[in-house]
Structure formats: structure tokens, C-alpha cells
Length: 172
Image 1 (cartoon, rainbow, N blue to C red):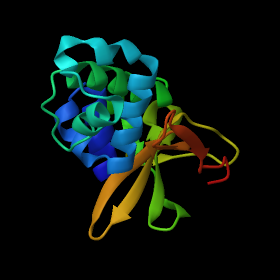
Image 2: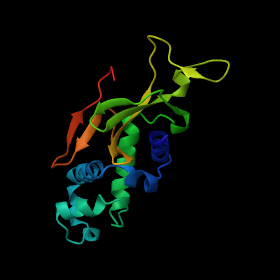
Image 3: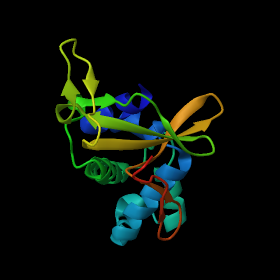
């Protein structure tokens, strides 16, 4: 349910429940990616003369108050939506089981319900050999809580520039 609620908030453009539910590394990498593509943001008066590392750290906290966050959040939400081809999030449903993709990491596939078969009782299924569009959410367990570590088939690792690592294979 966590992944579905999170992706629905992305679909609503509601960054407040999205951003703090991402892992610190995912938030940092998204901020670095945004700044790498928008280096003039450092010259914005709202950047207050911060260097790039200080600025991305200010943007990557759970609840950023930095004025440039509105730009980062708009772009980040759009990029997350692009990872699942902007499917309508109110037409997504959770797959029957999470799939482990690494230590303390799971892939949650959220299926586009109109692509599935539905029986007379309203139960959805994917016929053998059929395919369906999905929104993939990669979750990482940190103690008792889950956080979103990536979307699509990749983790985005912090760096200048951030590095994509494919962790989801078609058979997952």
C-alpha cells in the first residue's frame, strides 16, 4: 500500500508526502541531477551564494524550506511520472507480491488496471504471456520503515553527475 499511496501523491503533484518518503540518497541524487542540468540556479539570488554541495544538501532534506525547492520538486515529480509514462495513478493496482532486488530492497510493480483481465467478481489478473504497463517503485527498508529508493528499473546514486544503476530486470 505504501508504494501505491506514494505514486498517487506523485500523480497529484503533491510533493509534501512524496519527498520525505524517499531515501536520503534518492533525494540527494535528484537534487544533484537537477542542479547539474540547471547550473545557473547557483547564480540565482535565492541561492544565497551557496556552493553546489551546500545547495543540494539544503534541497535534499526531508522538508526543504529553501525557495529553490519549488523548482526542484516540479522537475523531480515530472521525471518520476515520466518513469511510468504518465499512467493515470488512480488506475494502478498493486501486484500480488513484492520482488526482492537486493539486500533490504524490493520492487513493487503497480499494474495499469485497464491492461489486465477482470473476472465477474472484480478480481484482476494477468493472463499467461500477456503484458501490462506498470509503474515500478523500488523500496528500501531502513529498520522498520520503507522508503522509495528509486523508480522505473534504476537506482539513482549521488554524485556529480548522479549515476544510474539498473537493478530491475525484465524477469523480476
